[in-house]
Length: 251
Image (cartoon, rainbow, N blue to C red; front, side, top):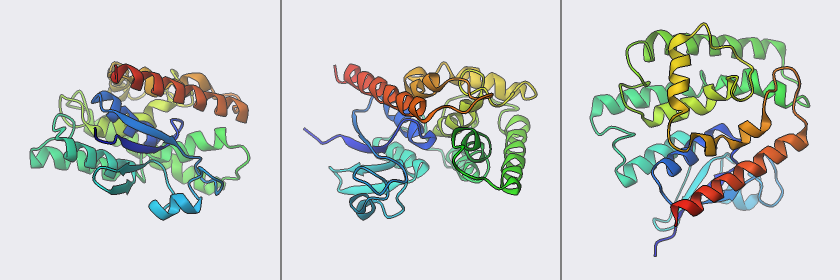
């Protein structure tokens, strides 16, 4: 019996959620190994044992024991999994269609990813001092990215790359979707009808609710920052939900 893929991280992390969603969507068995981001203690992403495998000290990371292979960065992991298991429904084999998926994934990091840095982090981490200029730049990048998605990516198709779901949508949704009223309620998408429609479509994708249990538990943070106890509790419930879903997959 082959060893399952190991995914290192926590479900509260957006990039981790994208990878876990892909695995659940494809009904693929895996092991979730919890890693405390930024911590140098045991089971932390800055612990020497973790850094020995994953020198950047980030989550998510993947360990494919059967192949003797380790990898960091969510988009690289998602592409690797699609290539390994021939999931061409989510990562097209057609070169031009695949290039469009790659194009969004490259755009994501310093544009849509700013949604976490510029909007979510300052509300969740009141202990961190974010310079005002930095926040303004992040928010400007968010608005620019949302406009490009609204007027370009989603203007003529149901999903980011055509009429079918791809890993580009999963990667995008975990960042953009967390802002909607369904979860943290810190961004109004009414001026973006195409994005609003896409958000609703993505909520219907298999395992959406399981992957986002931690956010459901966190709730509305638009007016008040959550207590650390709330964040920890939400993360724990997210882990339980994923393990329960894995148990169903494994019969």
